[in-house]
Length: 148
Image 1 (cartoon, rainbow, N blue to C red):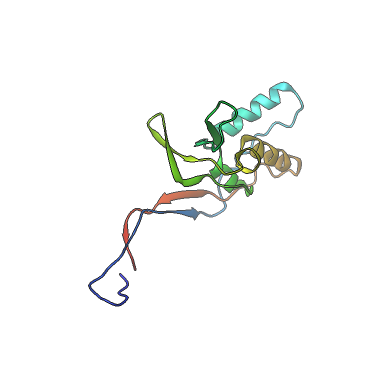
Image 2: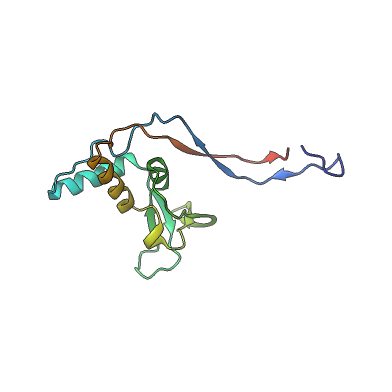
């Protein structure tokens, strides 16, 4: 605990999260990518992304589509080095008894979507790097802790 002016005073940090990056030895979610131009290739690649990337629901800011929730794949975008605007985890909403964050401010253009991962996997496949190891990224809850 840091004692600023009064050693009897001790602060507490609210719950936060931090990102931990492990050595770059993780399985690439694009490994197994099908670059053929058939209709089956799109379905196979969609199944590959859904199997290898954690889907996260978020609440859209503007509901013009009639669909209030969106799907993002932020951990996968992090692992693949895709730049995106993150969901707003300070604004939480109830979704089927689970709390979900508010989607990125410009969800349609800059959030981490299926298409973002699709394009990156296609790029990696064309360069022959779709199975190279990637850096695993995990987010851990910090919980309440004493100020130091």
